[in-house]
Length: 430
Length: 117
Image (cartoon, rainbow over all chains, first blue to last red; front, side):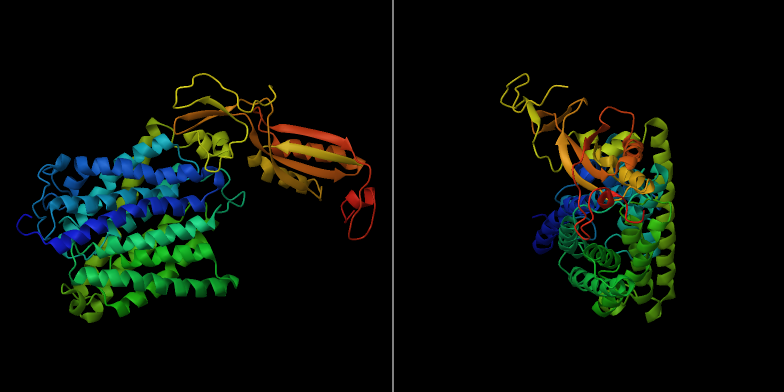
């Protein structure tokens, strides 16, 4: 091992990286359950596509722009195409920079996948691929530099443990912009559009929570106090959010709902993301309970508007991330984090910097995403034609169905090389 | 009395229900069916296996109506289900011998006409 490397830290970060990568298919499952059956695969594929595209852009330029140098707005190109990223430790950590790169790559991937929730069931897959490619650099890498890579927010003193700014607010407010530019689904507000499989939603949320232990628990880049605190807070906070969500469901509809519970898990995990290693477990419980309120309110209110931000990325990620970032400004505790106090412990300056992050992050994400999609929309159609939207995205975009019965399917070719039509079940000719 | 059978696109099923409701045709059964009409087969590929899917998903409405409701029902089905593309479906009207409303024992026209009328 190179000097300055800690094997324990490195071992944990390798595992944490794999955990965070798993969150993206988990998100795909979560999103797929929330859409109609005819759009299952397309929705899932938007998350899978993020793994493909965001990793490539991250390796090419994203990582460098985010983590090379201390420019106020943007990093340099010194690490472009992984130049100089090797076994030597990343400054400020005791893990090889290769592991640091991989860990951060998984963050970029899931953030791109998160945004897709705003445009499912109508956005052309091709246009989405172009959007994902550009967004991962123009929005994610920039915000990651501001919050993690030595940019102006980090330099000024903003505390963002695991990505309240780039991941949560970045995706949430970009989702709002994307929903506005792409426009509502043709059936939105005219027909009841229901989630087609609540079990996927619950299973996806469960796997996301599992992965979040790597996401937050790895954001201390080792096995020290910050990681331990963030790990445990990642257990505590979502549970408290669940309890409050149950109560809100009971008061509002007299029944505790399953999809509500899955949403609560996400909201709780998001809320603790910026605060994980900075607040005490007690405050983490309060954070979980309180963060439920604005997100719940937005989820109830949003469908009454004309904005078809389909899977409520803004409510679950943008709002809860915003809440978590500000919460750090109030209740960060140097006795727990060894870095800084919040307003409640006598440091008003911390709240100022949290407030700045909570304004700048969303503003940049919204404006840049809006402009980017307008630009892509000028070059190619963003949406599928109405008829294809009606038939479903799985068949029209991918030529596959999630729940194909195989009935009436006639074999045309196989990998074994049998060419030409070979009728298996020939229906009546037209 | 006639049994009106409408076979329509699944994505238009809600529009058909809405049109029937507005035409005050109450009493509908629907089921998912697979069928083949004149529409083009769609080609799907699963891991190197390419297939032509000759059967399309359809929704089949069955509506028993008294004779004076037949045209209203047909109009509503057409209005709700039409897109103008191949594959919009078919309507079949067949004579109905008997109908009984189980709750009251009312028979025939009394059993298939809306309760309010």
